[in-house]
Image (cartoon, rainbow, N blue to C red):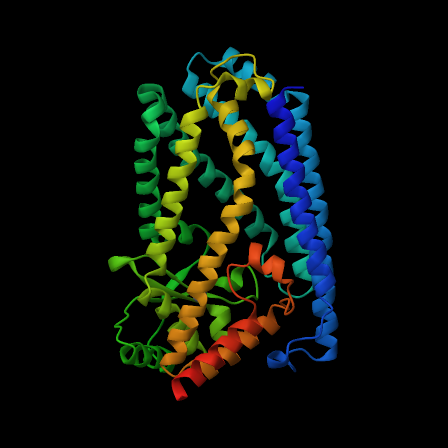
Length: 416
Ligand SMILES: [Zn+2]
């Protein structure tokens, strides 16, 4: 066996072990007593339902991880990737086309593997616990749209990167980073106009009590917001949400119709105050810069390895210069870095959440934010006692109890 292949397999097993241990720890903690600040959020019946929901998700998560590990191991060990790569050279003389055919087939296979899980999650688990609103027609249409979207956008990006590599050699990573940065900035600006409408309908929040309340509160916080939209989240799920997107003139606050259904006007205003906190702290731009830096690092390291034939050979490639195999081997070899990077990104994200909560609390929306968040957590049967290691690794938002304690603490701080 190729030494690099042994390393790749070791990394896969390491990641599998880490995620399994985290899931096991979380399972151990799910029966812990609910924190004091959250007492009364679930009655006994609802608590039992929440525990059953967690167990169901945990079981499917475990099966999905195992299936995905077995399939990936089979793909790299059997040498089928190398065989497919050689096959594409018989179908086309253009290296670019060979690359696109390879990843096209790769994408079809990974979609076929992931769809049954997504189907089971939507129509068995979410359905059983009363969350699902997706019809079969919507499910398949959405799957088709996401597939085509990834195929087109991924294909364009991959082509550009490959062409830059073929012409520029090692220094291609600088230009490729610029192209990726342009992609990221473009989609951050036009996400609401181009991507969201493919899956959901959005309309401006109509005039009335809620809009007036939001505009008045925003004005008190020093904002004039015109772009408040309502999205039909109820097309997919009863779960509610709100988010802030875009920057510059493309800024937009989006409220789910389910959020408006489940919360009072004061609570919605408090959620909005939290979103304005993200805007005030320029969190969208921070996130964007973080992703661009990540892309740059990835491309730079890839540029150091791109012309090394050993990466292709490790996956059973018969030619030295397979860009496709090198890219896959690189991503498998580089993947353990995620075990370091993910917690850092999540840590930054959790800090942003605390800061946005503190911003809402500063303008007197703390109490309503707490009651709104409690309602949202109860309605989604969320886990109130996640294991600290899981929070540290995977949570982009702090657990509810810690958020509430931080809001109370910021109240006290202001009083003294
Ligand atoms: Zn937030």
